[in-house]
Image (cartoon, rainbow, N blue to C red; front, side, top):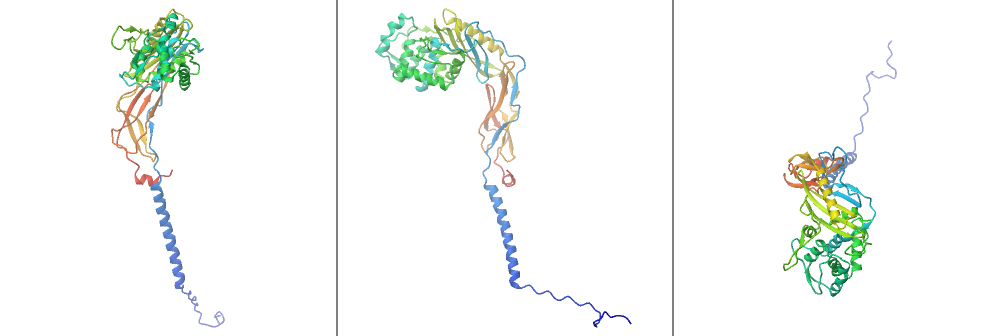
Length: 424
């Protein structure tokens, strides 16, 4: 007889007992939790989006798209250095082409007047072509003329209460090397020579002229000493003063009201591109000369600055002649290489979020140098956040050359999408 599993019954499976129904209060709590999570997630997303959008946008930057330097092949040029004294030739924007004779301080003679003019013009600027204020010569300066003549100093020959415009005083100082005017300029500026000499030495320190010491404004005192290297530093600074460059580019001093002119000692002026200089001579110093010359090389205006000091000649002419040979050789050593044609893409603006806009050269990019020299190529400028195609943005620099850069397309601020998805 079959077994029925015991316990009786009809053998069918028993249904599971029904689950207790969730209370309405529990359903509400669960719904509210879900809603809170959803709202929190939405708030988080909105916060992240808002945070990304309100974060400061990086400042745009400019970078090169061409090589950052150019090396001129070959050996450095050998210049015709004078056998005595010391000399330096420097090319603005490129550096020193060469030097000779060491760097021991030596008397400057009237080359010191470059600093006298530089300090005076720094504190009493003179506009291009203007005569400037009228200055009155002191009785003290006039009284010193017999003593200065006895010492055979170079002089204008001032008289008491003589009136000179600032420009004429500086012309007398720099063209005919007037010692009497040098000392009078010191008094006009600072009240006395000692105070003015202190200003000269302070200016020398500012220019990095570490081997220079001034004791007088004319250079007659042999204790006023410097080096060719230091005098190049000074002349480079002075050649950036328009009134100075105008004055030293004159062959002769012509007094106000007419009269015969007096020739200066820079007989190189107008030759080989020479645009200025200052001679000096004393028995202690020998012949000294600082000079500046301009030459266009491959379309790039180049400034050559040099100094020749301590030439054992009976006048400054020995130094001027030596400088002439150096100028010719230095100009002959300069050469130019085209790095990029006009319109070439030579740089770019980076908006900091992955967007770039090309920058094109407004003129051919040409680098000037000499054999054995490596010239750095760089880019300058503070780019805007936006700009139209063709707008000028900075410049590419290659030694002495600086070529403007133009936007090669519209420069736009980063889009909302790029600002939203940026990681950094």
